[in-house]
Amino acid sequence: MQFLMMTTDTGSETTAPDEKLHAEMGAFIEEMSKAGVLLATGGLDPRAVHITSSGGKVTVTDGPYTEAKEVVVGFALIETRTEEEAIELSKRFWSIVGDGAGTIQRVFGPEDVPGA
Image (tube, rainbow, N blue to C red):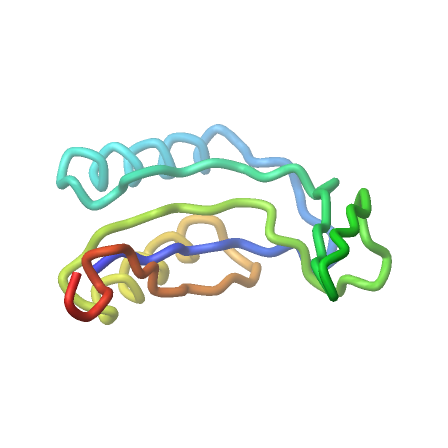
């Protein structure tokens, strides 16, 4: 099972990561990579491009968006046996980085389509 773990920026003030945080996060990422759990990770530019399609017309709007209360600013794509394992990895992540918010969503691929 694959899960996308996302961190969001809720507009609260944050402090710059220190050496200890870098070291702990580096060790956590290395551990997950060696175990084959971490498939990809990265930060996201909050200045996204929003695309909508309605009635055959596609509209493109540049961000950032003042109406957005939360913006996804980072992600990790992981592969675990269960959702509970994904939640435990997320708990470990938050125990390292401290305060914040995020979501975990299951990622479905072609192998998840019935009859595929």
